[in-house]
Length: 512
Ligand SMILES: [Zn+2]
Image (cartoon, rainbow, N blue to C red; front, side, top):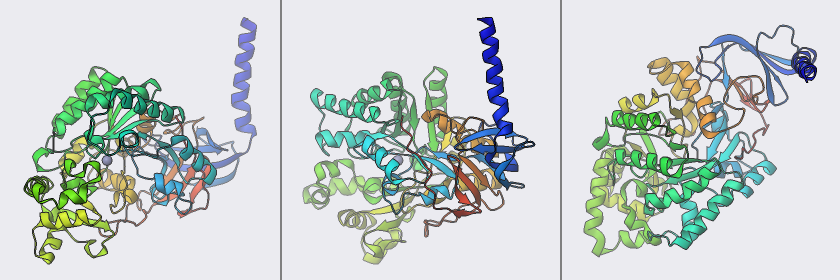
């Protein structure tokens, strides 16, 4: 037995040492400033890649490779991981599946199906991505809103026990097919029609599979139960459904709750101290991206698909105007809503205030017209930098883009965080920024062997130039690709080479 053990040890040593010297590697990245994702300080080191894995990190002396990249003056990190995107359609579309907006930021893995809204069939979607090819790795949540509307439609009714059973079965199937957890959008219809207890029932199923709960909370502002009560609701769901919870795009939205980041942080820290696994993600912009309907129209007016009818119902008019007027105040007024994309092209690029002036009507009347006429995406300027910075400093806050049409965050979140909040304002260190975009996210999402530069891990590797790594998009022109990524390896294949996108689709669907 003893002999066997020492033989086994000798063999394992031999296996470990011999091939790494004897075999030719595919790639060596030499001389970069290496930030490994753990939060440890940058070191000057080389990294070796063979097939889809990292083989060594350290000195490359004695190793040979088919190709060597000189990373002098450049930063080398794990590929970034985005836990909240809206890329399901992009990834499924052969024309957009390379996921350019994310690759150009150095993102190698995206998660989608957030906000309670996901593809209905998780297994089919992941299979389609495998078949067609995708540029980044991608994982999926099953959306609670998707499940609910599948079973009972867009109603604000309370589901029967039997309907709850059907919803739970759908979540169970989705988890078996590879979903990483359950997402909710409790601010949006139909998620907003769900009680906490209803959500707990479904979250428990995801938890039984080892999944997590991701939420766009019921209220990030003062719309209904308020920001702090929403944080507490999320924590309660984690405690009673027994699963980790992630608060998506954490923020203090609107003047009524500005400064409440301190209270939110205290509540979350206390929950973490008593053992609840609570994390959050955040994007580094003062504007959120939403729509006129979502921002201003009360949810009761949307129920059962009767939006247009309700907007024009004289019996509801007074109540509607009163609530929309308050919602507009909460959002910072008509100057703070910028139309970013709509089927009515004449309003894009204008604020609600400008549109109202042009039409010689009140901003709320203009908003009702826009809502009845197909809605419009808006950039809603409603956050304070001090709250953004306070959240960013927390060790449990990840970077997310929440990328959507009409907002520069889809194209610039990751470089903006580093350019603006690390180098320009010194809010956090470069090591903390990288950690919040790599290992922290991989561990939270339970993505195996990703998020670190470490032997045995997947070769998702980013090489960027700190002098030029930045976003180019603006609110007026959001769809400009970021700059500064020199090289990007996705599972060991070059997705960006010498600053240019390649035709490689090296991403993989990551199932739970
Ligand atoms: Zn959201």
